[in-house]
Image (cartoon, rainbow, N blue to C red; front, side, top):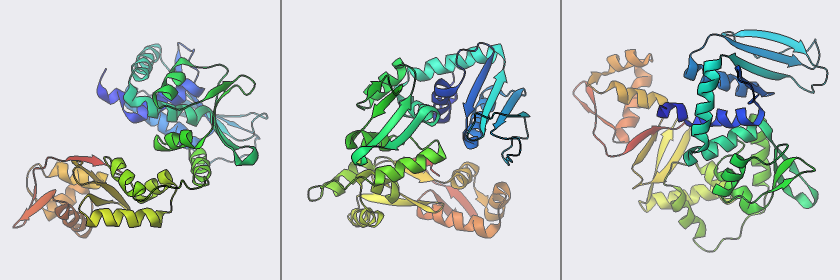
Length: 342
C-alpha cells in the first residue's frame, strides 16, 4: 500500500463512504450525497487512485423542472425525478470488482491508522452528521446511524470525545463545551460547506471562557507547533480575532513566533517549529530552482508574467528560501520543512 493511497483526502472519502456509500456491494463503489462539491471531490480522489473511465453520476431531482448547473463533463450522467427528495441529491458509481477489492483494502488500512482518525470522522460527519440547538441553547452534534459502529466508537474514544448512542434518535449524541472544543480542533464539519458554516456559527456562540492572566498567550504558543491563522485561533479560544491578533503581535515582538503570508492569509507558527507554510505557487518555484534560473525562465515555467513572478521571488527571499546572485535565482539549503497551506 503506497503512502499516497492513505492521504488525508482519501481518509475523508473513506469516512464518507462508510457513512453514506453502499458499502455492502461487491461490484461497485458508490458515494451518495446532496452536496455536489463532495461528489466532485470524491470523483477526483477515486479517479486519482484508479484512473478509471467508467464512472457514472446519477442526479435525482425533486421535480422535473428543477434546473441544476452542477456537472461532471468527464463522466456519464443520468437524471431522474424523486418526488420524495426535498433537494437534489447525487449518486456516484464506479463499477469494477477489482477496484472494489482494492478500495476495501484501503478502507481497512485507513481504519487502523490513528493519524487518519480526524479525516475519517470529518468524512463520516459530512455524510451523516447534523447539528441542532435544543432547549436552553443546548448545542448538539449528532452522527446518525442505525446502531453503534466499532470504528466510530474507537475514533471518539481516541480523541476523548464523550458521547452517548440514542436508540430513539438512531444517532451518536455529543454535547458540552469541552467536546465542542475537541471537535473544533479536528475540524469535524469542514468537509461539508453548509454544515461547516452552521458548526462554526454555533461554536462561536458559546460564552467565553474566563481565563487566568497570560493563559491565552501561553496556550497560543502550545498550539503553534503547526501553522494557524488568527481566525482559527480566535474560534479555538472563543475570543475575537482582534484580541488574538494583539496576542500574536506581542509574541512576534518577543521573537517567539513568526508569520508567513500565503495568498491572502497570515499563518503563524513558533519560531523553532522547523516548518514554513507556502502557497502551491511558491512550492512550485522552489522545485524549479533545483538548478539556478533567471527571472524570465521561472516565469515561463510557472506560466505567469515577470512582474507577478518577481513579487513571489522577493517574498521568498525575505522568507530565507532563495537568494539572487547576479541575474540568477538560487534555492537556499534549509533545515525547515516547506509545506503547502492554502
